[in-house]
Image (cartoon, rainbow, N blue to C red; front, side):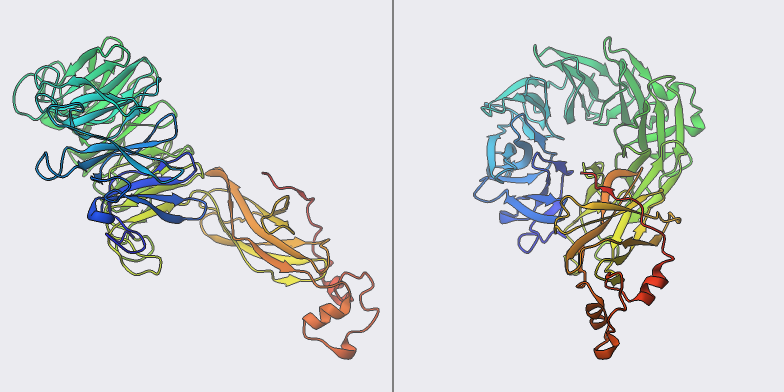
Length: 578
C-alpha cells in the first residue's frame, strides 16, 4: 500500500524484513520513495495496526542517504543500525559508496554515522551487505560487498559510541576470497563466520570460501575453499546463512557446484574446519535436491530445514537434515510454487515459508503436511500484495507473523496503490464480539463467534464496568465443537447491577498461540430495577405494567423468569488472567 513519493504511505519497494524495536513497534525500510525518492523508515504498532512514517532518508534528518538495502540491527543502547546504498552524490558514479546510519526508535531521529570511502580512505568499502551483527563487547561487525584495496570487499567493525569504523580485512581476491555476502554469523566462541561468493573468474578462491575472524585478535582464517564439481570441498557460490547445529558443526549450502553441478549441502567442524559434503551421505542421486537457494533454519528438535530451486524431477524441494544426531537427509515435499523465501519455525510445530512470489504456506514439522495459507491478490482482493521477498517472515511477540510484499497492495479505502503491502498473518483463534441479544436489570445474553483455526480453543467472556476491562471478571463459554470454521457461542450473565453500563469482549486461546486473542470491546447498560422500566424498554406502556408482576425485582416479568428457568446456572466466576 506504499504510495511512492507522497500520499498516505510514502515509500516504494520494501527492501528489508521487519524487526521488533525496544518500544514494541515493528520497523522497516523502503528502498525508494519518500522525500527525494531515496527511501523511507516506517513503523507499525502491532496493537493498533497503525502505520507511521518515521523519516524519509532523503530528507533533512539524514542528508545524502538513500536506498536502504539491509536489515536493521539493535545496538546495546537501543539504537537501530542500517546500511544505505546511496550516500553523497558523486565519488562512485552519481550514487556514492553507501553508508551507515542509526535510527532512534524513541524519537524517530535518523543520523548518518559514516560514509564508505571505496578502495581507500578512513572507511574503506562499498555498501553494507546483508546487515550488521553485534559481538559480546557491543561492537558491530559487517561485510562490504566491494571496496577495499583490491575492490573485492572488506570485513569491518564499528564502535557504536563513536561511529568510528575499523577495517579488519581487505579481501585480496587470492586465497582469502572475493565479494563477501550476508550478515556475519557469531559462533559463541569469539569468532564471526562468513562466506565469499566468488566470481568464477579463475584463481584459487574464485568459486567462493567460508572464513572466520576472531573478534578479539582479528586473526583471519580461510576455513574452506570451494572446488566446484569435484575435489576436497565440492560446491561453488555459497549462500549466506550459515547455521550451527548446537554441537560442534557449522552448516551451509552452495547454489552451484557439487555433484551434477547443482549445489551442495555441507558442514564444517567448528574447531578443525574439516569439511563434509553432506549430499553424499547415502542420498540416492535420483532424489538428491539441487540448487539450494536459502540458508538453513532450526526447527527446535535438532533438525535444519532448507529449500531448493529445483530437483532432478520436481520444481523445488523442502528438506530437513538430522543435524543433531545421524545427519540423515529427509526430502519433505515439493513446495506450492518455485521457492522464494527462507523457512522459519513458529514455535508450535510448523515451518512457514513463501513460494512463487505470492504464496504463503506452512509445513508440519512432524507429519510434513503442507497447507497453503494465502495467495496474494495483487491490487485488490482478500490478500492484496505481489512479490514476496526472500527474507523470512517475522514472528512477533504477539504470536503473529508479519511480512511485506514488494509490489501490489491497496490503500485503506480499498483503492489500488501498487507500491507494496505490509501484512499480518493471524495465528490462533479468531474471536468476534457481537452486540447483546437481550439485557434486563440484572441479566444479559451475549452472543459471539469464534474461528478456532484447526485447534481446540478455550473461550471466555471478559466483562467489567471499566471501559478498559481493568479488573474484569471472566466467564467460561462453551467452546466451539467445529474447528475449521466460524462457530457461534453464547454467554449468559446474571447478578448484574441495575442501571449500570458494562463493557465486555470475547477472549480465546489455543495451542497455536498461547497469547490471548480478543474480540472487540462492546458495551450495554442494564435497565432500572422493577417491571415498569423493562416493559417500557420493550414497548409496553400503561396498564400493561402491572404491579406485583415482578416479585423477585430482577427487572423481568414472572413469565420471563419461568421461561428462563431452564437455563443452567452460570459456572463460577474467576479473575481474568493479566
